[in-house]
Image 1 (cartoon, rainbow, N blue to C red):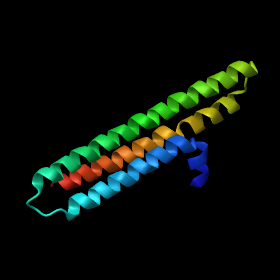
Image 2 (image 1 turned 180 degrees about the vertical axis):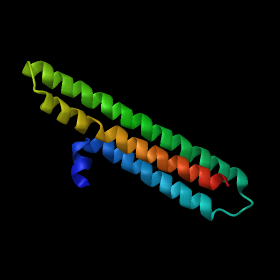
Image 3 (image 1 turned 135 degrees about the horizontal axis):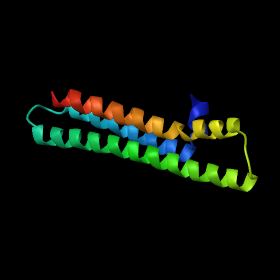
Amino acid sequence: MFKLFYMGSPLFMGILTLLLLLIIVLSIRSIMQPSDAEQSRLKSIELIGSIGLLSLVLGMLGFLLGMFSAMDAIESAGGVSPGVLAGGLKVALITPAYGLIIYGIAHVISIFLKR
């Protein structure tokens, strides 16, 4: 698991992990709020959804930056084998996959909290 974290760019994976922790904290805070604080609870649910979407966008940004650097490496090397290209694509897809997982978690939590 840590190997994937470091392969997917520690910067983006670290930011995404912080966003996941923020989603968890907001979820717990929303569950613990008294029933009369409905307006605050709805704002927390909306914020959870927004943070989830931000995670997805950051994952895609990490993918694009990873692909730019991979294409630069391919350009400077001249030619690469398909195996090396597939390996680079696999590494580049780690960050958007993590962002998509976080988005899914945030979406499920916001659906659960709305009920």
